[in-house]
Image (tube, rainbow, N blue to C red):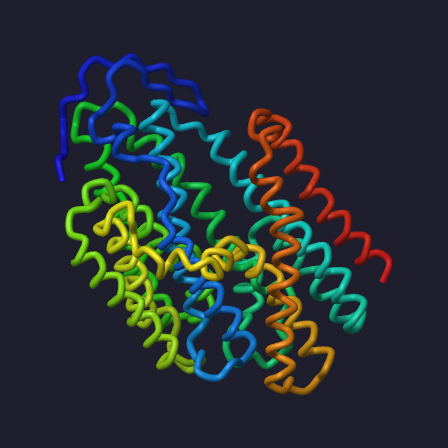
Length: 413
């Protein structure tokens, strides 16, 4: 890795929200190092992660530790988001904080709002008014992206819960991600300013390594002190997102250097995740030290794809059903939990295997509808992409609709 200190002549224009650097740019952030290339292996990892979570919640035999799919998601998310920041900084000389959050609004809010509102209605309709009221109260925190803190404060037990779980409990991980992304873009902007000491890449690597080390240490300590808070806290999961970010930063220095090593590394990572899925159970102390193996394994898969180069892993990851599942992974993650939680609580008793499989199929079908009708069209909307203020207004309307639905139910039942 070359840590260049020679930046050349740069003209800097700064505002409170945006840094634009023109003239010569640092070689470390050259646009040719961060091409906007599609990584089918990353999409395949998304598919794997969501399937592990869905099959675990459906009590499918053999998927004992499928809950680790959420941690796989965190690593992938850190990688993808940081790649976007790096490409923007390299190609435009710009890190736009408003632009970053406008993209997050288009990507996250529409599908999340639809699922939240539909879940509140469905919970009141199919379960008791008492259960509906409890879940509507949960929805207030979920809509503000602090659901993870709310569930931790309540002492929610993800494993072996004595009370029926919230029908909105899957939103806890979305809260962790968005809390990380309140901090990371600003830190990224500061670390890529044209300082004379060290290169932007060196600063990013140093900062991310520090986050990984401290967050992982706290994860281990907190798991032994308070497992509930360790499970829901953004501080204990920050290292997973930071690992993905670090892999994005060093990716260009790995690209295509050792295809055979990359293939072996990626397959070793896949096998490690599958082994953890089999051997981990709800009795595993989590996250703690146990989470290190699947998170590191996810990093191995991503690094292996970088070492392999543009061709990635060929037909294996490009298999259409795998890519399609990766496409709908966000929508599937959102919709599967309320479907399964409401059905299980409505039935009172545990559901038979064939019913669980039917719920999985229903989840996939509704996720596809959500993806094609809401998530993808809005995410790719050029109208919103070219009108940042409209995007922020649209986001405010969506959040307002969520709270209006919540308070309407709380006041009428």
